[in-house]
Length: 118
Image: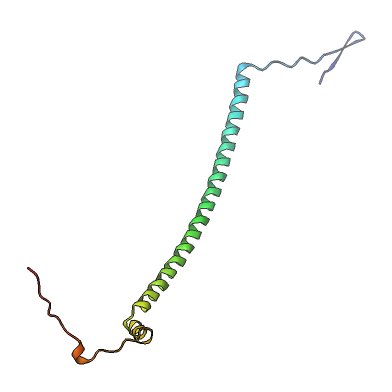
């Protein structure tokens, strides 16, 4: 704050000095501070982005695990159905009911011996 100086009854006031220009070092310190703040902000933003990306991917992996479990269960049930459809009891029942087949008489079956061709 400017101070008043009194000399021999006359009052002289001290004028404020004009703002001094910043030297090159002061500008460099300001620039270094700004760069440091930008780097810290970039680091924080990268951490947040990485964290959200990891969460998003972990949710996707969890959905894939659930889908895999569902598909494994469906595969098991389809294999069971295939086993049921291929069972000899079912095939014989269809042959008798739908196709009208009967069990052959003992003289109707001809067994051909297995001969190996050399």
